[in-house]
Image 1 (cartoon, helix red, strand yellow):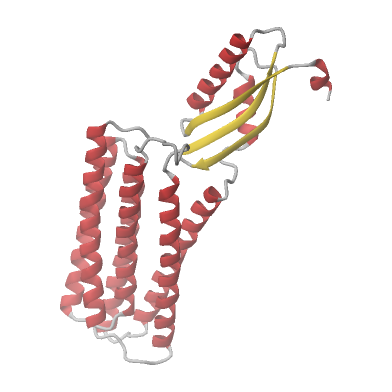
Image 2 (image 1 turned 45 degrees about the horizontal axis):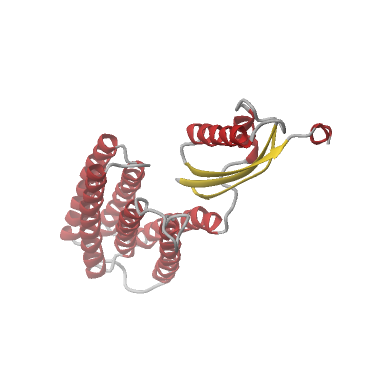
Length: 295
């Protein structure tokens, strides 16, 4: 996604205030969760902190995406965001383990939660805040054409749904059903772990240079370019928003170097048009021989 400098600053500003809102919500939940010994509320606080961490990653990623390639990083700096996301995944999974241990021990004994009306009011307030953030962030995403803001608004919406469940568990705990608090905490733990596993699945393949676009999808696009007789050795790697493609094309051996070079450029342009996430394509031009077709 390419943004003008003015629009980039607007996206950065939006991410910054969303981060502030998520952090404030997380700290409020954590304080009252510990005050009332509610594992579910504390687990939800950690979930909100993950939202804040996601905002930090997004802020770094959106900014780094506009840093040009240099001598030390000829392919750009976008994988810094991937490394940061993997680090967050480790923290997320560790958080899930710790909350799971605490919730499990609470089920088998320990001091039960003692939620107060103030805690319920805080949870209700955080739900309202997150709902407002979701609406405003989604509106900004449409106005600015930001994929990250759109995805992040959906993540915040999931936090609203989790918080509603926690609020219900606090209300039932006050009514004498204390066992619901650790059970809801376990459910939130599952959501946190799911987020962590998802981050691992998104980041590790990128860092290991897994195939970004299947060769079967690239081949027909390449062969649709006039002058391309055949293609092979199709490879792709990179982040979902920064894919690099390497390939060999075969052309009429009677063509001049200039003509072959022109065909290669048309192939690159066609790939970028068909796959907007392709930022570069390295194309090796070879002469086509009839024996190649027979084989």
